Length: 441
Image 1 (cartoon, rainbow, N blue to C red):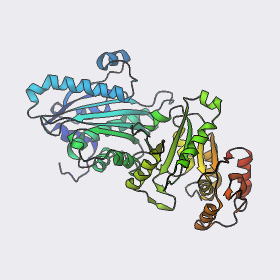
Image 2 (tube, helix red, strand yellow; image 1 turned 90 degrees about the horizontal axis):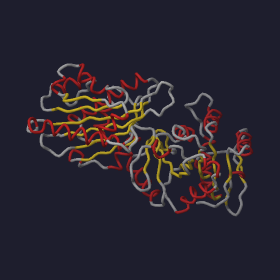
Image 3 (cartoon, rainbow, N blue to C red; image 1 turned 180 degrees about the vertical axis):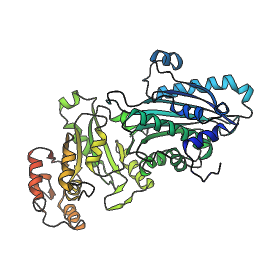
Image 4 (spheres, rainbow, N blue to C red; image 1 turned 180 degrees about the horizontal axis):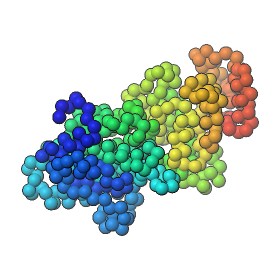
């Protein structure tokens, strides 16, 4: 098939079936057997399908793949991949190994349940040979299913799996090419990939951190996590039931005082909040949107420079597609019911209050309402009067007033222009916004 042409899932599955050198097995748990079904229904399935299996029952799954892991988890997926690959080679290596590029496709998915109360996500894995007899290559992805119905999610999983297998043999020149191929027919609204790992000679030129950033820069995920210890995990595992302190900003330069911003806020969390959660967690937040130039996206290289600086002071980083705090908190609320505390400098508060919120019909009022309806508190740290004057001048703000104390301006001593000041006083008095007194630069 011509490499520069876009094909749908039907054409991709059929082309793989007609390639006599590609042969493998499918093991799918959850969301039906939608990937295997494509290969079975397009014709010539015997050319590609060695076996399909779907171990829905937990006891059956444990007998096949072992106990001690959650059923929708990376360890379970890894156990499935190892088991299916070993069985495939045991049965077929002697007779077909010299001329066959084997693969094992596995997934374990939590699609939308009957009540619609579950986290719709899963793990997808592929082990494959680029050439007969080569060392195997693995690619493992964590996905979020965004469709509203179980049937639509099943369909998306099927297309996603076909695309992944096809990409392994026809679109593996770069991570960008693989992701573009995997998302064909799906767009960027039906599935997210927020964690991607790989091993094997086919990926020798891939850079781990750049690919992780690419998931957001390229629009394939709303957010990803860079942990302080560099271990890759999807956001749902890290944020689950945690009391969060999120510190958004540009962070063009970083000092140890930025670590204090999170540390001080974590120390202020109420004991009741911590007791009802799985503990407190502090993360810096970056956005691929450039607040100084709304139409520009920050490059992966720029992001990684800032990520490294922030990791060096001891905290992980959440990289978001959006820069609006109400979108960040909405994302975090997918995985936790605990209060979200934004630890911000006064400069971030200025951006919140001056933002035009053009994408919202209710403009500023709707943006503020969307933020604070989500059990959110802003802990605002002071900035020097020189920095504040510079920001007001740079952003061409007029009518703002403030009072300084020892060369610093606190959140409760600043007054936005016009009627916004009345809204701001209400947020302060209602303790949606809290003024933090420690001096931070």
